[in-house]
Image (cartoon, rainbow, N blue to C red; front, side):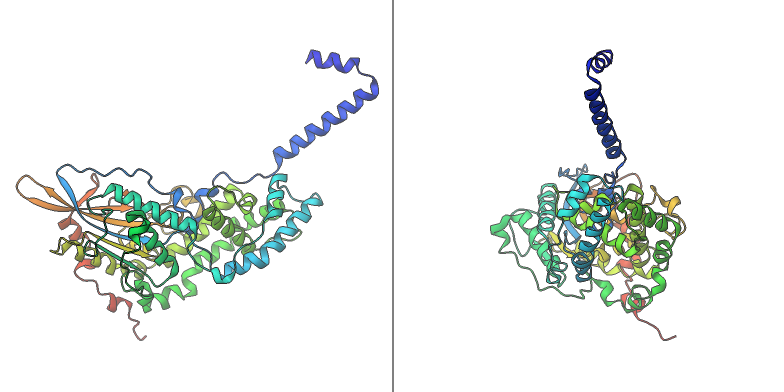
Length: 459
């Protein structure tokens, strides 16, 4: 400090003034850079059902060991991997986002807004790259998610998922969609390699499959929940509430816009951020950089409200109708045939979420509502970002175990490749005795009255 003061004193007045002005300019630039908005720290964990599986996967592929038990059969329901958006979202990406991008850049040139320069540079270079004909197709990242999932499951259960394919040992099924079919084929590549996987037999997909997509056949759910505006009232009220108002106000100021941004525009920013995060593992979406931590939490909660009331615990019919999946699994486990070792189904988020609720998993003490965002913040179990990401999966493994007097069978339940303990089963161990499991889910196994519960009655 003394040395710098000495140098300044030795300078001629003109050069000293120039130096001080340059120093002041640098310090002001540093201050502005420190104050500008550089993005969120939690974006990658708050992307709802568009969360890429790499953020939630269990990368530990070691085999679970239960003393005196050997695995006998494997049954799984797997959501398709990362896909493209719907045609409506692609249209918004192509038509609305370029206009919004240009407005943000223009306003910052007029010293409006608080985005950092590097964000503006990346945003100005952004262009949409999808056409509506690409809607909902599985992406390369989605293929990799399923391939790697197949590899890990095989390493955990080599006896049930051997790398040698046989029609007698494996049953593959997928819904009549490109994303489910490509997911099944990618999973097969993970199991058998590309050459052998070409010989795997896949039955033709059924759009309204009674096990893989049972809700498409449940008219009562479709009319009273899925197509009923009342079922979305909590999400709509939240989007009109003070938390969302605060998000809209702060995002508007951050982007330098002249008018308050709409919920629709903030949502398409969030959704584009989500999809691009899933598509590009090594590249950050510039749209993610426009939102703050609290913005992500609010937008994620709006998504959670939607899935809670449409697919989760909001209405009993949501999860009661999932009984065909448990019935199918238990029928397979009870079969005397020992040739078929693995049943592998490939479906959608709607199936996985309803199954999770049917199993009693991730149930909060209080329902998710528009009015309890702060109470649920950070502690709620129903977070679709973690429980229903792309490539989400539920698996059951049947074990034969030696007891003191005779052998008996137990079931391991896995979600996202991790053991989960079901309500009604032992809380202190991962395996649940078959008889206990059958008692807990007797209504699904022995009394799955799907037709009765899903038939609309005349009022």
